Figure 1 (cartoon, protein in one colour):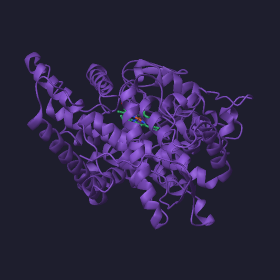
Figure 2 (cartoon, rainbow, N blue to C red):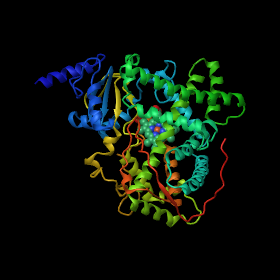
Figure 3 (cartoon, rainbow, N blue to C red):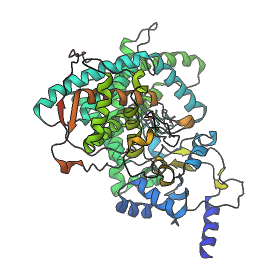
Figure 4 (cartoon, protein in one colour):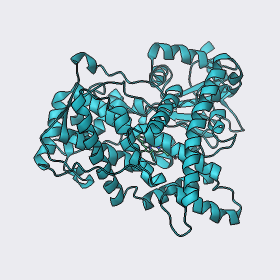
Length: 502
Ligand code: HEM
């Protein structure tokens, strides 16, 4: 009875605006001001991963879980059915506002990831249109990827002669280069210390955050005290470092831009700023360009690399799977021939392997936070306007009723009885709907190109059997645990001509 009364109260507390509803969103009881923050922290200490906290609470309160973290109202969706409902509905196209998101842009809502409505949609459309102009999703993208993976293999062949290799930063710079040539017409050397330090800052930023928004969003006053002050200072330091690199890149473009020529996305944006000056819309400004670049840099830098590295860890952990994938490749590609993106439909096992890594490793265990743009109902549960809504992709990818044995790494689950790839609509590593990942085409192509190049040219193992217990590191996205790999070259001819770095 007490519980029913409590939940009725919870419902009232969850209500905003004038829409009445007789339904409640269930969740743990909250405290004034801090909400569920301390329960969340204590459960996180036990569970180690934020997505496991959501899983634990969802098992108690259901797949539409209501929480309060500091001043933020939060709903976590843990079932496929409601995830589709949220992600495919225009009402949840919004992104939350908050101190942390505005801190990057002198208190304004800018960029592409944390903006919405007509402004956000226009920026997203502009980005996609111009990234396509510079190769995104086209033959030019494949050309760039082939050149970059070839460079990567040449570097790796040299590096692995000195013993076990730390693959992460080497792959990361090459992966980023393809995106960066479209954005800034520039490739970086994997030894570029400045870039490597920026990438370290991005990792630190991802490790510090979780997709619920973090303490600085939930209780912004905390930035004036003790630990909160430290977190705020470190956040500012990271943001300033990244923004000053991006400002420098834009300044260099401004020095050399020509009115009748567009080299990359930055040039296209600078041209648009000039055009928009006459319209006085104030939507295309240099400040917006800096934050948009920051968003693309952050979203594109680690996500793809983490997927490739998680896949390598699985190849090390399951040598038979590695052999099987190599056998499939060897059958089709002899000597020096290189797989193209069109070959994806001939490499069924490899495609199934990539899909299983995306399901099992959950690089993005949740979506980026969405925001209800008005009062809405999901399955008769009332979600007030401005509630933050997170979809737990992890829960969908690990649903026992659907997958049967989700804890088992088994690429065959994505193959039919004749060995052809079998898609499963429950696999949604890039999200769904209007806020679906903007980089999906590039990410998928990159993973395919790097993985095929690696498998064709090397056998991958570990210096010690004991080192295969790869525990991911938590953060806004999951990071693979650091490790070294032994790369044994396989007998193949490859072109060893390197392209110059800028
Ligand atoms: C395997 C690699 C990747 C994975 C698993 C991934 C996954 C995701 C997910 C789950 C979202 C959130 C969707 C939502 O909030 O509903 C997202 C958003 C986004 N991703 Fe990716 N992503 C990857 C690579 C990339 C790359 C290479 C780029 C670079 C262009 C990129 C750019 C973005 C952007 C800009 C957004 C925000 C879109 C928006 O707010 O409208 N992603 N991604």
